[in-house]
Length: 276
Image 1 (cartoon, rainbow, N blue to C red):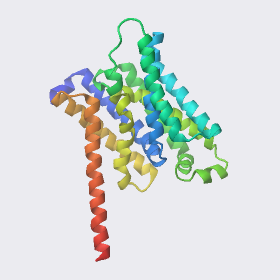
Image 2 (image 1 turned 180 degrees about the vertical axis):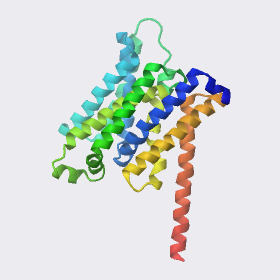
Image 3 (image 1 turned 90 degrees about the horizontal axis):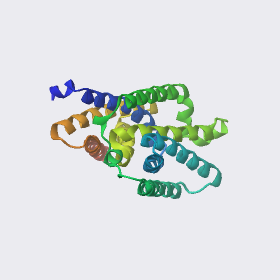
Image 4 (image 1 turned 60 degrees about the vertical axis):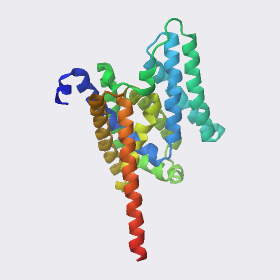
């Protein structure tokens, strides 16, 4: 295992996982407490449409995914805020429509159809220096943003009605959060891929929730847990020669069910002690 750290691509993968964990821990915790998991899932799968469009137009697929997901996020915001459409229906439409649009674009792309496995399931071992810089910049931006706007975002997460009557910019903040989800999805595509990105955004937060009393504490714990999951998953992928994205998520699922089982067990015995 030690010899793996002698390779530049392995060290870059570990670094990318650690930086992505900052994004997952902070934004993922907000998504979790705000019950926006389905929204994040819809945006992440709609990103496939941007990748397909990028190939069709002959531009970087991740650049296509970036602008496409931002557009989808803005469209979801506009429809929810103005048309008052049911959010689940919208998410289902964008979820399926984005994937279908991406496949359609790829079918019209001349020449060899690209191998989309890395976009669907990620390959953090192939992360580029440019991607590392983009991840680092987004991580710093997310930390600064939530540090500055934490009281406002906390009010929006737990009591949106109070935030609205307090004349806080609720609609603008909602759009900002959706945009952050969209950008985070594009960054995390390289780490775990489109199919698994929603799990990396939510599993660390779900694991941290039983041990956290505040949103800030949850974000800190979720960031640390995400760092352990990404690093451990990458190491397992090296040792057993398996896809890195899948190993990261399966490790997260295993830890989540262990925490869930421990919490249920503690609650059961606590109830029995109380009844006794």
